[in-house]
Length: 151
Image (cartoon, rainbow, N blue to C red; front, top):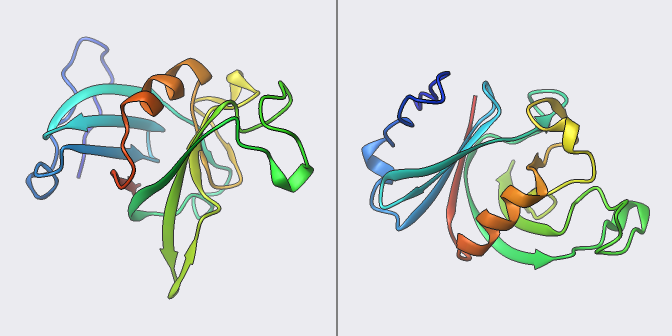
């Protein structure tokens, strides 16, 4: 279990030892809507995020980043990448999610066009971040970085 402190002066939680072998690792805690980025088991930075309207919308488990896209189009509503109305913001970290024996690439960690949604349970399943913060993370993350999503 990962613990996220409520005090901004407290240290971020220590990563479970089975995940410290990874050069990069991300933990998303849906109970607090926090994302923590780790390097070699050390917490580097924690961000507020938005997750699914219902707990079941944002999948739980261990996944990997399979793609990085700048200005990804929002295909569902045919909104071009880079458009200020694009709900995906300008950075997309696509997750490979295996559920019920099949693989989905519909989930991601991304920016958004509604900054006030951060910290809330509002998405259709993706993990939303402030645009400035997802740009920072995007620049650090490598393809195949593992992401643990938990309650």
